[in-house]
Image 1 (tube, rainbow, N blue to C red):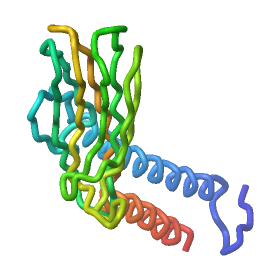
Image 2: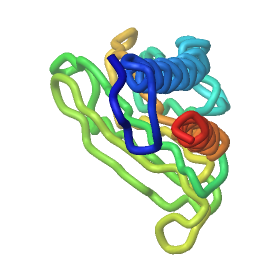
Image 3: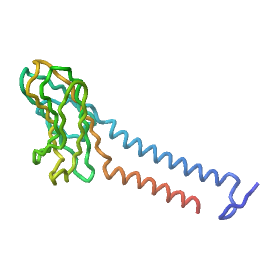
Image 4: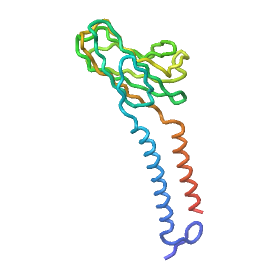
Length: 197
């Protein structure tokens, strides 16, 4: 009925109870951490952007817009601002679909606001295209890339022709969130050692 364990006599099910209690507490801590982090991300909504807008990339994880040609040369510019380092955000712009013959010399660029340095660019053709960037204080050529323009420019267009723009932002978990997860793990470890003693 009784068995000998490493530190003395325990009831037949006591060791199993201690282990199940630890696992339950660890699972609860993990669920709480995931719920906290998910709630922060779920609170973000889709943000509609337009020509000339200035937006904070940490306020949403998805930005959508519509670029419409005016029947000649033109441009469409949105400024994105990000959090500061050390945890730089990333953004992926998805453009299109673009129909054949609607825009001539259509160019998309991510440009640093601080020094007008072109961080990424692509000429757009028919279909869909993607172009990514990273927001960081120590950018290319030592410039500050925390604020960037997403610029579309073209030499000619059909009046009323247009295409969709979607910017998916990935803002990293702040250091406080990482500390929270580490602290919960440490508490679970301390509790386990207490129970084992």
